[in-house]
Image (cartoon, rainbow, N blue to C red; front, side, top):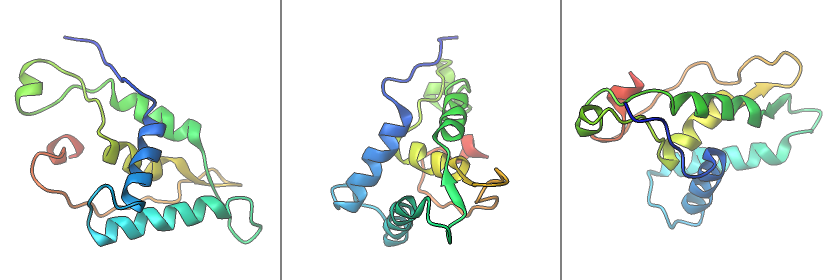
Length: 127
């Protein structure tokens, strides 16, 4: 099997995706744009005594690095034994899911998620 590869920093890919969505260069559903806007607002609140959450880049990066060790499970990339190279939207989603933690306890902020996406965007892999 071919080894894992990542051509750029996954957290930078996530940030670039968020910038593209907020500048409307990337077309997404309105609920997605609002979630990204909420996330940007929350990043500005880190350190506020009334906001207990922090974004732990090391935890986010650890999960994104883990993803690159996993092989595709379906389709032509699986047939070629390729490993996952997360798309920018996946980098954003997973970094936010695993990177937001409580500042004192370290418990994850999000422990349930509702995710919808069209065909060919990694639902089988995520399952």
